[in-house]
Amino acid sequence: MKSLPVVAALSLLLALMSAPAQAEGASAGSANVSVRLVPEVLSIRPGKAFTVALHMTMAASWHTYWKNPGDSGLPTRVVWTLPDGFRASELEWPAPARTVDGGLALYGYEREAVFLTEITPGPDLPKGRFTLAAKVSWLECKDICIPGKASLDLTLPSANGTGSPALDPGSRPLFTAARASMPRVSASVKATHSVEEGRIVLRISGPAQGFGSPVEFFPEKAGLIEAANPQAVSRAGTGWTISMKRAASAPAGAPTLSGVLITNSGGRRMAYVISATAAPSTR
Image (cartoon, rainbow, N blue to C red; front, side, top):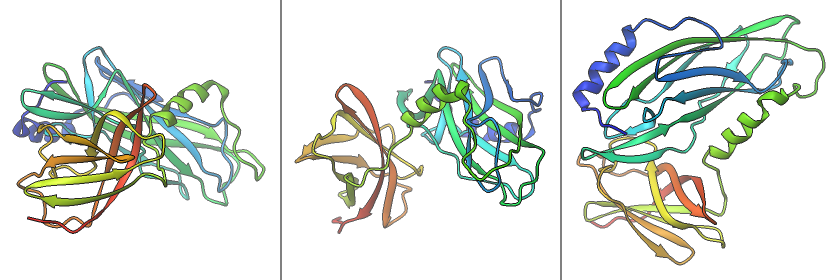
């Protein structure tokens, strides 16, 4: 991944706001990034939640960004316009990858990324066809960075009955892979954090099978750590200790440190949701 200076990122943010949208439809994009909306269901039912995927495909060597882009970049944004009575969940983000380039650490995706949103119709949904619309914006980077923007929509029919909506067998592989890429919540993965001599120290205990190396932590919020500074990782019993250089701009006292822990288990990349409570700190 290539870096983008902070000033340039701010300029591109303004460009994102004014760039012309792509043609509307279920799929759109740019020369380097294609985006499409994929429903998991064939039809919808009153009050029954269903999932829609935003599938982004990047050309070779191009990348987009996670919700915390790291030292540079802009996260992908999705703004929904839904029929009356419908509501959308927060965007679910797949686990990111980290690349250091030009002294900057970047958090994001290469080749493809699938984001999930749960949509819930109202309980009094009438019979008919309903259109879901999404405005998507992103930053695509290789040797240069270009803002991307698209207006997407899909239309689904409503169906009678109180059971769960019928799933689309054609989209099953995409949703299976997407859910496997999401950080998982595990009751057996516990964490605390403290500030010690200018570093944020994250202590993680894990399941009996343990985590395999390499281990890396991605904070959900930017500005907490020096992202390009190497994380010092050591084994601690059945878990790990990760020491990260604290950013000069980090707010004092964070009661909870949230993010994603990337580990290796049996040669497989694993991601866990981390919500670390504060331990007593020493300065």
